[in-house]
Length: 256
Image 1 (cartoon, rainbow, N blue to C red):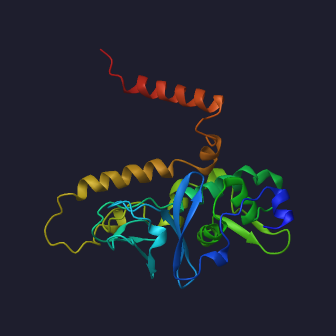
Image 2 (tube, rainbow, N blue to C red):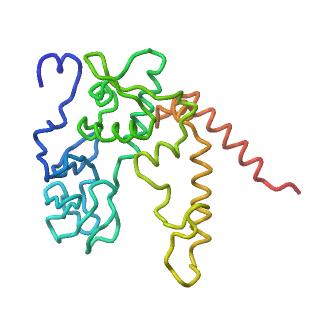
Image 3 (cartoon, rainbow, N blue to C red):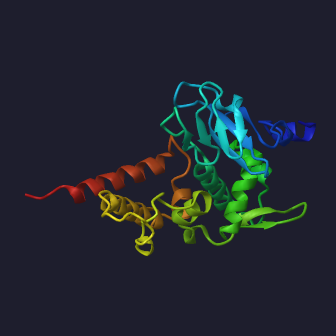
């Protein structure tokens, strides 16, 4: 870290050169222990560092393509999604593309009226996030048309459209893909299942998919920004949440 970065308040989490292609490393950040890795293709991912099988340290393991192998018993997890790829673990580990990506969007929305771009270094500083990982997330958001990038000394990122016009479904699909990992979920995907017999769980998962899509689609980035800041939440946010909860409970209470 140079003197200019120290004066600006930057905290060095790790240098890009510290995590070589095809490797993972343990990084402590905001009270979390993360396994951060870079594939041979230069893609970055971050998952929880503790194996859900026996507490092994994933950041001390090996990276094979996008599979992180636990050094204790050989369990494998996807570097980008945290899902289990090989036993003995059966529970996934947490991954952070959606959380970190939405925090990037919220930071850009908060600065939208300043008429200037924000660099990823500045966003990483404000949100205390790993800079190298943000580069990949920002690329996903740009390809989805949610942010724009400007090159040059004063360049950086800004929202591609007003925060009120960015739905959470847009953000999540850009960062993680489908809202629900089920091939037949959604009206347009009903034929994407090769099962010959009627599926016993399709209807319930279809309801889950529709509920998620409706809720996330009705929530804009502007609404997320309005409630950002907690916990502990600012007093005005707490009051608004209490009022909304009371109103919802009143509507759900049956009358005699």
